[in-house]
Amino acid sequence: MDLKSNHASPVLTDPAPINKSRLGIHSSLLPFSQQAASLSSTKYMTIPRKKPGKLDDVRSNGWLDAMKSSSPPRKKLLMDFNIDVASDDADFAYCSWMLKYPSALNFFEQIANYAQNKKIAMFLDYDGVLSPIVDDPDRALLSNDMRCAVRNVAKYFPTAIISGRSRDKVYDLVGLTELYYAGSHGMDIMGPLSHTVSDDHANCIKSNDEQGKEVNLFQPAREFLPLIDEVFRTLVENTKGIKGAKVENHKFCASVHYRNVDEKKWPIIAQCVHDVLKDYPRLRLTHGRKVLEVRPVIDWNKGKAVEFVLESLGLSNRNDVLPLYIGDDRTDEDAFKVLREGNRGYGILVSSVPKETNAFYSLRNPEEVMKFLNSLVAWKEQGGAKCIV
Ligand SMILES: O=P(O)(O)OC[C@H]1O[C@H](O[C@H]2O[C@H](CO)[C@@H](O)[C@H](O)[C@H]2O)[C@H](O)[C@@H](O)[C@@H]1O
Figure 1 (cartoon, rainbow, N blue to C red):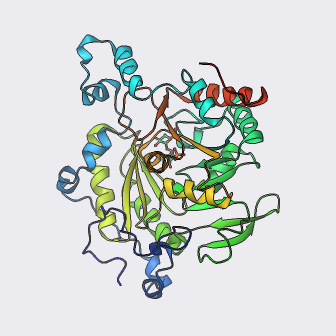
Figure 2 (cartoon, helix red, strand yellow):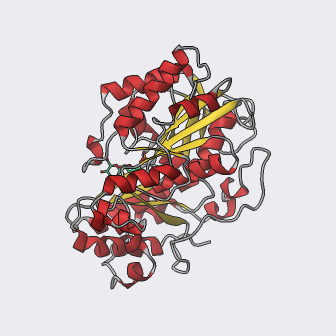
C-alpha cells in the first residue's frame, strides 16, 4: 500500500472494528505488518512543498465551520444554542444550560453520594482544565496551587492525565510522579505493570519511568512515528508564511495552531493542512480549541485510553469504582461518551459558555476545577461519608 497515495480523503472517521482481543482492543491497532513493509526510510526524507489550493476544499468539507466554532466568541455560541443574546443575559443562558449540565460544585453532594463506598478513578485533561487557555502553548503552565490540588487528589484516588500533548511535554508541565500519563490523545500511555494487559499485547512494552520504576508503555500508533515526524516537518515548512501559525510535534500526532492567525487567513491555513493531508491517507484530522490536530487513522482516542488505564489498574467492569473525567474540548467527548454509555462514571465539561456535550456535569474554568478537586480531597479526609443533601 502506498502510504502517500492521493486517492483517499484525509478526513476519515475511525475505521470499524474488525476483531477484538480479550481487552477490547481492536485489530486495527495491531501492527500494519504488510503496509509497514512498504515504508522505506528514504521515503520519509522528502518533504513535499505545496502551495495552498483554491480554498474550495475547506469551504465545502466543513473544516472552516468547525474552525470557527472552536473556542468561539461567547455571542456565537449562545446563538448556536438558540439562546437570544439580544436579551444580553448571557448569565441567564448559562444558568439555563446548567439545568441540563449541573455544576459539579453545586452538585458536589450528589457526586459524593454516588462515590460513597466506591473508589474514584480521576481522569484529567490538561489544557483548559488544569491550565487556562493562553495564546502561546508553551506558556500554558500549571500553577503551584493547581499542582498541589492534583497531588492531593492523587494521594486518595488513582489519577491520570489524558492530554493531546506529547506525554513528555505534559509530564514536564505537571511534574508529579504519582500520576499516570497518557499523551498524544491517549496514543502514548505510561501506566503500572499489569497482569491484565501487558505481556500478550503487541503494542505494550515494559519500560522504566523517570524514577527507574518498571512500567508499561502502551503505544498503539508506534509504527506511525516516522510518518508523523515527516508530516510535522512538511506542515512547519508549508505554514511558515502564515503569520501566527504554529505547529507542534506531539510524537504520535501533530498540532497546527491558528489562535494567533488573523481570522481572514483561516481558510489559507485550513487549505494548507488539507493539501498536506491529501498525501497521507493514513492520517486524519480532528479539531481542538483553535487547533487542527493531525493524527493516525487508528481506532483509538481518549475514551479508549480511559478504558485502557482502568483495565491496567484492575478497575474496569467493577461497580465499586466511579471514574470521573474532567475535560474541555471535542477530543474529550470520546471519554465522556465511554463513561456515559457504559453508565460507568461521569464526565465533567469545563466551559464558560453553553455547549452540547456527552458530559453529565459542568465547571466554568480551571479555577472551579481546582475547587472541585479540593472538595473531593476534603470530603475524603472527612471519611467520605454520605452527604445530606
Ligand atoms: O488534550 P489537552 O491537554 O487539552 O491538549 C489539547 C491541545 O492543548 C494545547 O492547545 C490548547 O491550549 C493552548 C494553551 O492554552 C492554546 O494556545 C491552544 O489554542 C489550545 O488549542 C496544545 O498546545 C495542543 O497541542 C493540544 O493538542
